[in-house]
Length: 350
Ligand code: SF4
Image 1 (cartoon, helix red, strand yellow):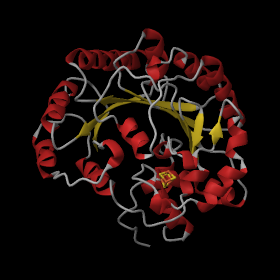
Image 2 (spheres, helix red, strand yellow):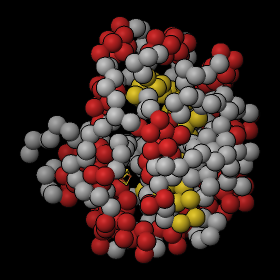
Image 3 (cartoon, protein in one colour):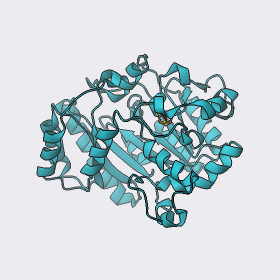
Image 4 (cartoon, rainbow, N blue to C red):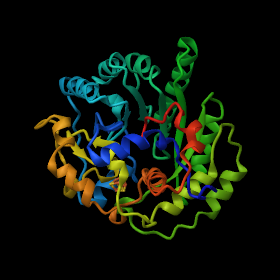
């Protein structure tokens, strides 16, 4: 059987049996994305999170999940047999002083974690715990002051040294937002990153407030990236794919990811995914009112899994996973061809 061209995220097939079972009889999520903090130490003009909230007609708050609730959540995740937690923002996760203890709890419960951070603030306690995770992705922004950028670079360096010293398997990479206006500044950041021993650099298109339709011409930024020296592994085809997906309507209605993953924001609100955070229509409950399990198993969530029409959803990082899962459900792919992908170390992060 020949493989379809757009089959680009196949690690998710590790959970295909779980998905089929869950469609019949709801199972636990495999992974959860959690925002421990909405506070941030940057104030980027085109903050992706603010853009998302604005798209959903909502505004950013500046709260953090308190320590007791984070530790309680870790226990709830263990009891539900959740495999992996993606820690991101919202704001900047490392500003939550309880983060190290939360990560220690996840280690104790054998739950994998990865963290997305701007890296501006990191103390020794945070570095010591994040290095034991599966990955750390540093997001660097052109809106950072020079001082903030230097602070992030210093922390990347410290983390790489710590990883080498403690011999952990943490994948340390960097993500850069690219835009048609300031792509040369992004190029300056790449030059700095070339001096560090990172595993990869990835590029993502900057999204404007309200995710409004735009007619940006990406030829120049992409040509520029092709010409500059990028020492680390990177994939410009992936950037092009992300750009083309920005305003594409999905070609399926059922979001199968709703059986495998969920999202909790720093207000304690539970949404089906990070892309729907702030969308009151898809607010499933709040962890300060109910346990996560009660919310996950609620009738409201169940109806959403059945009724949500993905064609009305914005650009989302679950698109490639959904495409793969739909093809598997329709028997359009040969599962045995993807056994190697399903053994990927990060297959549990959805
Ligand atoms: S299709 Fe994407 S945005 Fe819509 S619910 Fe599913 S994961 Fe979220």
